[in-house]
Length: 169
Image (tube, rainbow, N blue to C red):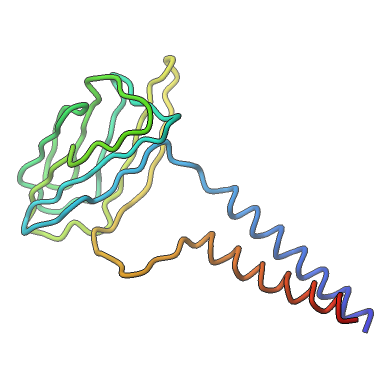
């Protein structure tokens, strides 16, 4: 029985190590870029900043993996720099910071479905460019769970089983 406990302890430790490395390896985005609405060919996107986030003049938002884009527009604090049928580039024209939701600041029109849009956000704070990237899928999901949450739930389940077996023995 001791050999089984050691094996289970090793499995639990390995699972926790793997889960923590997966969770910590994902870079945190400095802002959220999401689809706000899609009606016909119109796609409207929202940018959300947390209390410690900011946008500064010159920061860039670049969208790629688009299809059939015919019109691209932007609202304050963004200006449209340029676009074609497969990409669009926007630049920040006004400094913005703090917890704020910038509703429908980016608008794209396309007769094609804009699934799996990739985006890059280039920050020019203090003269040191940095960037975040991600992708969004405009298809609504009735119930979604982040992959990290799933890992934590699985590891927690095995950890609770281990603790229960320790108390029962």
